[in-house]
Length: 227
Figure 1 (cartoon, one colour):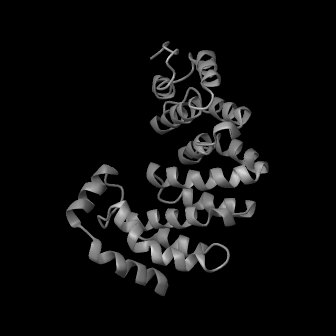
Figure 2: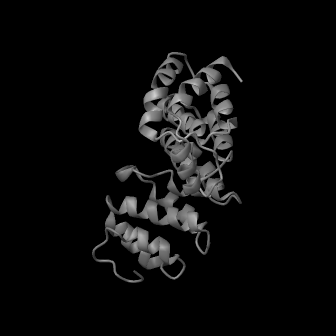
């Protein structure tokens, strides 16, 4: 463990809350240990560390790897915060390293933070779309979830051809986190192009999970079938 990680952990300890830690762990189905530090306070404590790290060029992958090796879930959150803070520095060659973080101690909390990083990278480098298609067919559900959701908040920059291909690769799947993701990305895009989403739902309704339809149609006043 580096001195930086040791110092960071020491700065977090006074803010730890055992009772809140138990609650946070229970919320995550007791898969991870927590210090019990809420997001706002965690970011306040770690902001000076991230500012210092940003003064150095590039991305400190050793720092990220060590954070993801730590037992407390807050450390993975800090890693996600740092990577989001330096996402403009990412290059296509970094995607493999981000992928490793995705499949390390995977759950929706870190995955849904890292998909913002990957979405930023793939928008800057469209040649990576082929990798997203590969991820959409991967056996790892978290890679597939990121492939589905990585275009969130793109609005009129949404690649609908890519979106449709990725969703089609995941139709007929019974996995909750996949069907939820399909609903979320469609709901997100419905704010920009409700006609496209409505037509998509009508076209693929027999194969879409009811959860996906329910989530996707939240803002579609005219769409009522299957809801």
